[in-house]
Length: 259
Ligand SMILES: [Zn+2]
Ligand SMILES: [Zn+2]
Ligand SMILES: [Zn+2]
Image (cartoon, rainbow, N blue to C red; front, side, top):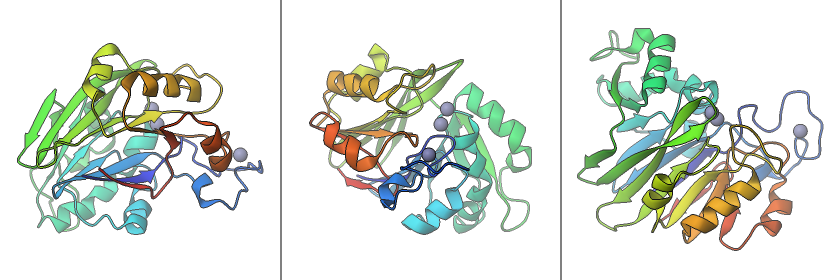
């Protein structure tokens, strides 16, 4: 399994507009964060999770040139805004609709923002077409399984996703945009080679986990490696990497994991 972190920033990104702080002006590329999303390849099955405002640029930068399906964790702007750029992938599939999996909340956002794309196939070459599905608890493919669970994120729930590749048996969990990891989600992620957790910033926040909360969740899950994502400009990569407990790392744009 391969995981590409296309973006690891919070909703405002880093650098933030009109901020001259040490991190927003840092020359360390790992402090430059586009909005959060990942691309997972399981034995050749290409799964895109979320589409940030920078989705097109992220695909160009990190060599994403094909998609088999798309999963929306939730309907917040920083995860849904890039979905119009999925049109290119419909084209590359030979003009067929792309399957989109989401929660009820995510589906209603997609319907509201992209009503012109809810089609069996693109009207004209180059147009988008989405087949919308409610994300089931388990999605099976010849290449592996994708399990989902719900994570609390303020007034809504986010999809937590656990990928398991059939040929290797390797597991990977992606839990972004959440205030906590409920017991079912803890259990689902056990045995994963890597777990990604929302670790917004050092201070607590009503709808995201702080770094300390994310580290506590990482310890409870006990994966070989844990990565924090959805990071604000309060986090200097080098400083915090040296401070985190063993086995917990900061993700950064362009990080690739081979599990
Ligand atoms: Zn700043
Ligand atoms: Zn977000
Ligand atoms: Zn969110």
